[in-house]
Image (cartoon, rainbow, N blue to C red):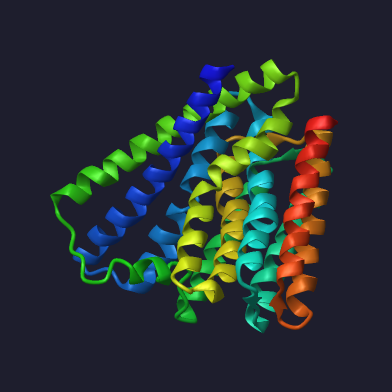
Length: 309
């Protein structure tokens, strides 16, 4: 199992570096060809950061590991709202806004609740995948009309930089890295699950989810160090929506996903988690250190419960 753990860690690094290379190089190349910062932020940056989740999810689905496929998306979203959001609030309380709560947060809650309701049919099929993708495209068009870009913070760090031939190599290298990372992570995860005697769902909703959320964790820590805590909230809620509407939607379009009882249980937890976060954000329009500690605690208790079940 030691080799599997090393392989898993290596795959997480491949996903992290690959996603960063894709976002940075693609944004610089797009800017060179005169594509607006708004469009780059809405497409390349926003969707590029969900590349690890997508590669792991679709890789698992195509190889028949359906529990890992769905649990990765569900677990990643719970990890984002529980551990990462909670940790950031513990470092410094996060200020909320009406837009984050009533527009983005409510959209995430309704999307999550919708997926839960459809999951009771036993399958997330092609049609539902198409509905999720249509929802994502509509949301991106709406943001474009409002002149809002979820990737504007990342683009600030690229100001003054110009694309070179090296960015072309990094773009190709990024796709190779996340493809290899996704394959290795699924392989290592299934092997670790067998060695520990736990289900693939448990490994997917915990360890794999944490691994694919590594880019979000690093990005949030960097933003916190730079004093940009006010942007973390919107980015994390946006990331969860992209995971569901984009990653899960496209995966279901390519291959329908059967839903196990464990998956429905995980979705119920996620609906509750999203609802709790929205209530916390609405009370006082901020997420306090105590509330952040509560979210981290809930995430840790859920992990312990999953492994002991």
